Length: 481
Image 1 (cartoon, rainbow, N blue to C red):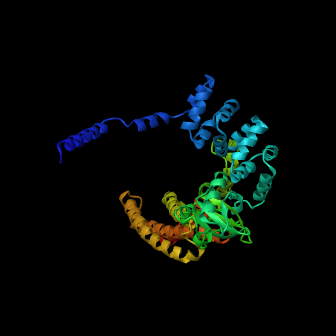
Image 2: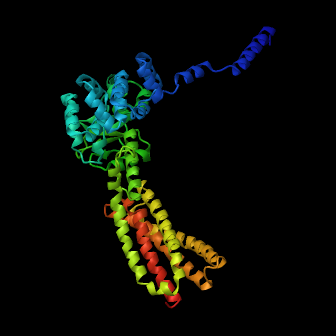
Image 3: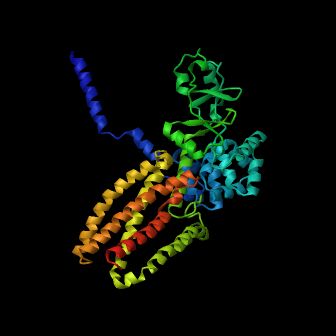
């Protein structure tokens, strides 16, 4: 190796070493560019009339979904000012993330031409979602801001049943013909792709009937002279317009799809449901299930966006039902007043037994409801689930009974007979609670009810009744009361 080469190599190594200790300018610039744009800073720039600087900041440093969250606290004047600084595309996307109150404020403040620009940039499924939340007078104004063809498509989507695949699908997809070449297909994607929901999967139709699909990856890595028919996939998943939207979302999640084609009863393709729509559906369904499991009627509004009266109306029905159903427990206890008079200490164990039973039932119901939601469990698995829960209950009840029996003896709350009686009641309670907790959601699913209805509040009430009945039956027999 020559001396010149050695010297040059050493110089390069020295430069590399120096660069490790130098800040990354590109990264530094990027971090400075991504400086957080807060609510206070936006208001300050508006007050100082720094409109040009704010417009640049909004375009470079703010995602539409984050901006929608910030604008929730703005009054109408500042909301409109910020909205008018956005480019058409960003304005439309931000509009879709706003809540219904913000949208209504904007619609009333924007001119017809401004509203028309926003509507033109929105995807059709987002437009339908907005219309479904607006009052009739606002809907009329929105529809006036759309062209006749769009209005026809909107009315068609609004006719599909609520919670169906048709109600959440998007009609903006790329359709190809089987005789088209790869080169022609790519050219079409370039021409119309900008206005479509997704371009990653294209659908092959013949007289509107779905016959296949092809990925853009396949088009870009295949000879341009080949036809679509040669490379398309005919073994594809699809759903019908009347299918439940939750089932469609699960299919997309299960198979890792970007979009799922939606067809009518004649197998004619009418739209697609994309993965982002599926995520929204699953989020809404999960929120609904959690609300029902907590004994609260589902509400689409946010917590702070819901009035006190609406909160009361959503919570009071279940509370009234559960309070009145507790009358059965009271009646059972009243029938054993004589036993309680002879052994008052029996009453002290009731909260512990009912609480343990309710917790065990809730554990089983939660796992079964989750299994039903993700498709792991079906009604045909009823006896398999019961058998598994019974074995789990036996193991748990033995542990709880032994620990509780030792507690009673060590704390002097009773003799060995009392410890055995409470332990036996505990074992029976756990088994009953586990069986009830896993059975009710499956039965609800079978008869067409939401399994979440059979969740914590209802199961706890049923387990309480069963526990009290078993408890007094056992102690009455054991102590001849």
